[in-house]
Structures are given as C-alpha cells and as structure tokens.
Length: 241
Image: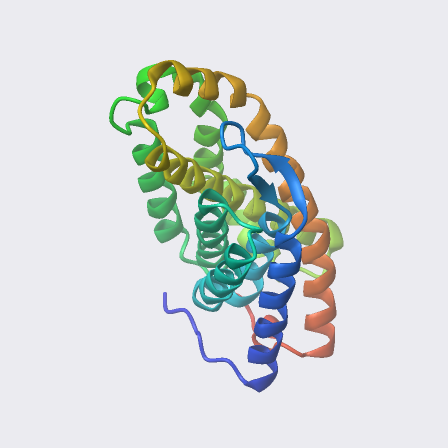
C-alpha cells in the first residue's frame, strides 16, 4: 500500500516545529545507559513514536535524523539514542500507515542482529534478556496491532489511547533494539562485561519502554486530537484503508 509523503506548507512547518521539539526533548535525560558513563536515554524517545504516527515514516525519519544530528552536536544524544529514535519513528510511521509487514521486517532484522551478534549477543550469553522484545514482536504481528491501526481514526478516546499505546510500545521496542545493536558495535567484546550488562537490563528495559510508550500515548493523543479538529494536518481526517 503506498504511503503519501506529500506535505503542504502547514504540515511541513509543523514537521520543522516537531524537529525543534525533538531537540528540546533530547536535552531531558530519562535514564542512564548502563555501561555507557555520561550518556542517557532522553525524552526524545517519547516524541519519536508520536512523530511517526502523525507524519508517517519518511517525514518522521527526516525529522528525527535532523533533530538527532543537532542534539548530537550539543552533546544531548549518544549514538545508541540517535539510532533508537530514528528506528522508533520509522517503525511507528510504517505501522500506522498500514505497512505493518515492513515494520515487522525492520523489527525482526534488528532483533536477530542484536540476539546473534557475534560473541556478545544475548542469545549466546544470556537469552532471558530477549523476553520482552519477543513479546513486542508478537504484538506487532498479532490482531492487537491490527486493532490499534484501525482505532487510530476512532472518535472514541479510549480506542485512540489504545491505538497510540500499542503502536508506541512496539515502535519504542524496535528503537531500543536498534540502540542496543549500536551499543554492541561500539564496545569491545568483553564477555563478562556484556553478560553483566544483559543481566542488569533484563527487567529494566521493559519498565522503561512501558513508561516511554505511556508518555508517548498521552502526548500523542492530545496532539492528534488538536491537529485533526483544526484540520491543520489534512491527511489525519482521511479514512484509513
């Protein structure tokens, strides 16, 4: 199914504003990155799924990339956070615009790369780490995500909340996986270090991602309603296929 990436002036202006907002959110630290001293996951992780759902994969990828470059130059972003934000935005955009299979392929590709990364991947050192990422993939390919996609154009607040939460959760998990792959590529293959890192984050990252998805949901639903009612972004009022 084709994705319409044509934007009018108002929509482009809003994308620029959200890029700036993404940079601002990047200055707010949410939690430290275990094993990477001085670096943190930022509140930009909250905005990435929202941008994807509203603008689709292409404009959100551009916005998170440009916002990430700016934030990185200011020292707000680490490389894992940079790649995580772009991936989360792209996956939420693909999913919300009906390209769930493509989103699932992106998710699964990063997951397999993370799990079976040579020598230090969690599949070799500590497989339990992968439990919540597997659940995320199951949600993405299940009817739960299908219902969420349909509910993105519902006038019922509870259905819209559900749609944003499920889509934000699966996409922020995709981002977390991409960030972890970047993390693997950055550091030396010290087996004891990586085993300890995987053990330490096994139950930490699920809590973190649920919090991020909830915050994305609260911000995203409010923004979505405002834009739709004012017809500022015209394609939000189009019927979903």
